[in-house]
Image 1 (tube, rainbow, N blue to C red):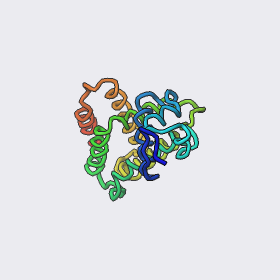
Image 2: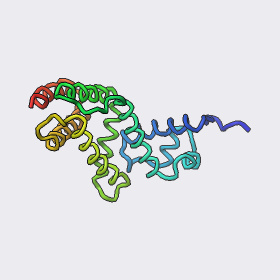
Image 3: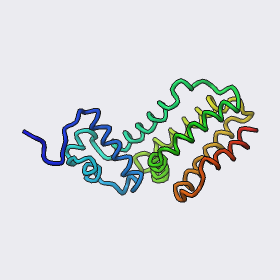
Image 4: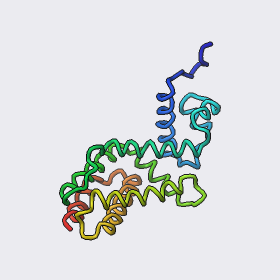
Length: 191
């Protein structure tokens, strides 16, 4: 029996990756609440039943999208998870993150949209984002800001600046993100 026109048989790992990529784009564009299972399936040339074979619910798909983003982030820093001995090293690592994020606008948008939606305690990713913030701050304090006299406060400052800049950059692509980052980094890493 041959697959229906427009549908392709793919190995499981490839199909899951295709679904996660399409879901990332759809959520980044419309938010999680604005996308149905049917829309996720259609973006991959699948039926709803086919999609549910890979992900049992919209919520499971959402968490998989977020975990995929985290995996992509972690793969970019493998081998650099040693505490930065000084401000210059920490700045170089963070500048690498900033440059990578600039090349992944849809992922930045995905994270921004979902983090705002997930402020609602009833949102399926609410706990995920609370945990991610706590763990992200702890990682910054331990690995990038241990040299700073107040690593906890510095982590909050750094995250607040980046979150705010990302939000404004998504609203106005005329903002020179890299120039804004460098100006902030000149002040922040001189402390």
